[in-house]
View 1 (cartoon, helix red, strand yellow):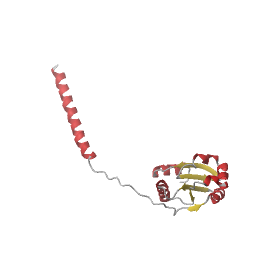
View 2 (tube, helix red, strand yellow):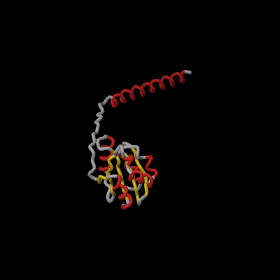
View 3 (cartoon, one colour):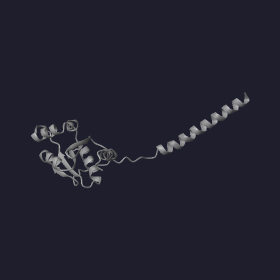
View 4 (cartoon, one colour):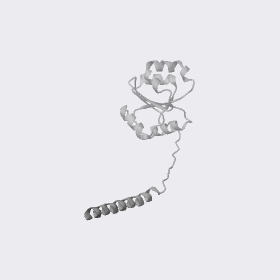
Length: 161
């Protein structure tokens, strides 16, 4: 019985010691000031060409690989995605920027594009959205504001990079 009591006390002292040690060390690391710098993005279209819905249909049909960024220049998510897309080095890829307009759905070219690629209905309500076409086929889309790692994974998945 004496041994059981001694083992209990040793376990209790070791457990309390470890607990106090980890909380004291853990608090020092957690209380260190963390700088949360908010990154501001500027719209960057230096890597792309501005397109209209009419020329976009022609470019998809005439070129092998096409990436289309659809967004509004003044919105923060579009600025972020355009900057991230510009930071990636993609050679021999045709990248186009299409300014999202509220009355675009009335356009005949827009209706023809949706008729040619019905899957686009899933992506056209988002801004920004990145669309990838290869050999006149729609490969995939990435809607909304994304992080750089997600953009890279998407472009690897679509075999653009």
